[in-house]
Length: 598
Image (cartoon, rainbow, N blue to C red; front, side, top):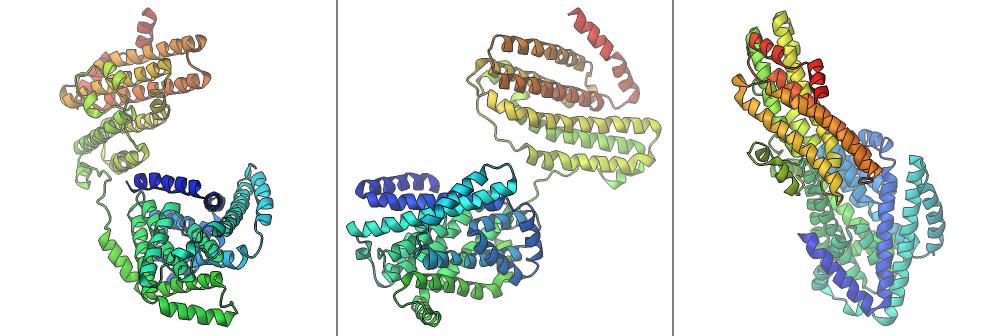
């Protein structure tokens, strides 16, 4: 919702600025180039996060002071607190980091990001860095096109630095030209009203640009050009620090509970730091003056004094919050408790059932039926069909042609939560039960185990099929769309028939599966002939043809595995009745004979 409001507002402000002043274009372009450089830099460092950074992280976060140090050093090197935050969240989510260590890294990252202000104020504004930008861009882009991951990473880093330098140059030049037409310093507001006003502007600018680093560069270049006063620049820097937490919160919306806790810690730290900086603004200013005098910073060098201020109030925040880290962890765990487990647990498997052979077989059979019940939803949604539509009396052919809305689905997540855990528990239970069974019961148990494996294989094939299916059922090409809809219809009809057998349980007539076996074989033959016709008539292109060929194979395997599962799982529990059903069922030779007659 916020993004929908902000985006049009940003466009309106930028359009007005471009219309009012051509110099504003240069400043805005500088910010855009700088942010583009940040993206390149982050992508470059991500190339090196596959091993070295992780190993260092594991060794340097066993104590709180080490976590803080890691945050400082890594952010200083990468010049991106957001990248450090992403890495930290990923380690938290994987359980390789504790929340306290993650909070320590975030604290350190806040201090590490202040080094950017020192580099820009002490180097970027005094040297014509655009001269360094061009060679970096040239060499960086050449390396970025190399196949080697290392060379590509170095290329992205060089190009990123080149864009950063170029962006700073344009911002600096823009503000220098801007003061010839409009002097923004005339709009300076003194005292606490100015402090709160410019703090709010700093928050807004950081939320818009999604980078406190970019906001700080903008502040420093504007301050160097005399476009803002020193006091207002301090307020903007405080606002930028607070604003960067909004970025963390937005990023944590899609993270797990640990990521949300870390974002909460980041928010609390930056708000506390900002409030302390506002309350003690005058005392911190006196401290900045004293330190600047000690290190030889000129009294009128406000850009370096801003860097000193930025470092001091972040350092004060760390010193203030570090003793409370453990209390903060407890508070966040209570505020954001772990979600209730959504992983499906076995309903029937228990140690008591291991005592008798009959209970073993029936327990496993019931659990595999439970597994099938959970798998049915995944299979249906994978075909972009709802369970209730399959189980209804709707004409699937007509319904599929008119249903266009794509069902959002994370098959991997559902497979883990609803299928894999049950399948693993079933396999483990069977391994414990084997010594207590007769040969006959062992055979029955293995057939049920194979039925469970058939369910798992069907889901895996649906996952592969879905990749192209959701693309081509929305295609403008009617021929490819129809072929994929036919696949959906045939598998949907099979699922409907299997659901009837599932609900009949004891009275299930497994001989109806022979009809689907014949349809499956006939469909495979028809698909091959139709595919050749579509290619010959140039009604589909080569990419469509290969996709359809592969997906017909997946559909065939899905049907085959589901029919196999139903044959082993549904129907009578009596072995003699099962043998009778199997003797009446068509074998492969009989199936081929019927197909040849047709």
